[in-house]
Length: 247
Image (cartoon, rainbow, N blue to C red; front, side, top):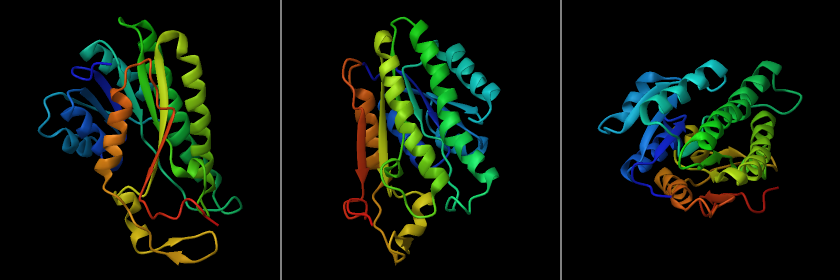
């Protein structure tokens, strides 16, 4: 696809990976809708960028997601890219995590991604030229969980199924869908792992992180491909992260 002038929606754009990806897209020539629950954080992301549209949004709310995509369509007339990034975690093994925390994680990480993808696909099918791309932020937890992360891990395994289904169902409409699985990008959310993270054998081990801008560059690469080409899954981690060989 032509990057310059394309329209992107980034959820969870107020911080971390979402902010880094939004900046990478804006600098590549996209017009970017910044979605997230904290308007002040979104405005910090948008500062200095004329083609950023701030849209406060709670992805767990169908009405809020509908408003997000209505705003984007009313402003720019189309959606070329959705980066489904909003996500949260909850500590706890299956017998420890509360039902409230379980439902909160699933509502944000899975149902929120579904709601955003549903609106994006509807617009992509109707617009001219037809088509677009969805990139879901999975996690290496979609393959190998950390201890005491049942809600987050289950949600990210489900994102893989969502990615495959959208990829398949989008084919007749020139809609591509892929997933990026990121391990230990340097954001506030991962700051603690440098001091020590619980391993499967019970040890607490410091883990390396990598510059979040490299994750953003990977998303930009996936987004910049023509719609007849798709990266279905891309994994990017700190080189020495204990992912391969966990256990």
